[in-house]
Amino acid sequence: MAALPSAVISMSTKLQPARRAFQIAQAFDAFYHDYPVTHERDPERRAFLPWMPTWFRDRLEGASSILGIPVPPYM
Image (cartoon, rainbow, N blue to C red):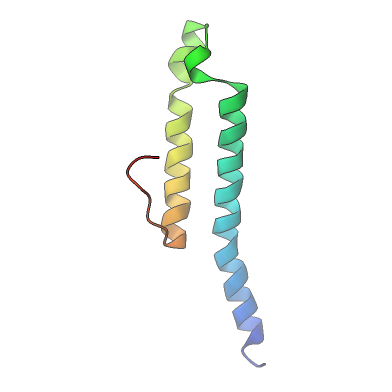
């Protein structure tokens, strides 16, 4: 019982990256459905939109690294 407070703190610290990774994945899903890159007709937006998946991927890879989850080379 004496170790319980430190165990709770340790668990909450470990869960935060997982929660954040899930939020990032949800945000990307919403982005992809709201702004489909392949169907964009505006040339300026079509040039910008492919950058966003790269940004999301980098954030998810960082969160996965913190959690010790290997990232597959392709999804």
